[in-house]
Length: 240
Image (cartoon, helix red, strand yellow):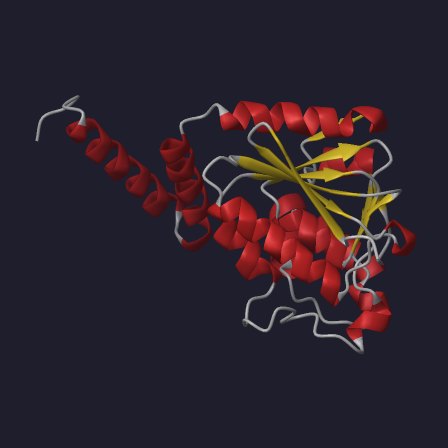
């Protein structure tokens, strides 16, 4: 049986490929176990500085395999109490979603958990939770509106209609749209640029950006300023 997730390292970048193309990379327990293991490897590696998640074949990920949903442990696949948001958020290294085709429902949630997305011109996005009658569980109701605004998020989630790559770019869901054959190359270029950054400072900037979710703008700005003052004192750029 083919590996449900392929894992390779190119320079300092891990490339994680969802690999069930015959099922449009639908999510089952085996795929999740392999995906979580890959993300844990990214987290623990001393040489991997960024990761790319993409899909094999024509789809990025079509969401839950409904057959597996009723017969397998999707939400605690390794039996360690950790679900997808727990694993990817613990990774703490930049993750680029390279969206090569359909990203649907659970597949869209995987994409939304990435730091940002680069899309093939063939990519499309949909949230069909309301159509299939399955409760969102990986951040759809919060992360989609964070990406596109609450009104567009409501439109996507209420209608279950697909959004093409151009619209996804215009709405702010993806950062770039590139020709299909250039997708992975472009994602690698971005990952290489990230790999050249100062890692401790990159981690600090990420933490400051993400702290805005739980703080007012004023509180977030104060936190950034205090961090700069501590940085400057340590390097004797300012007195005190």
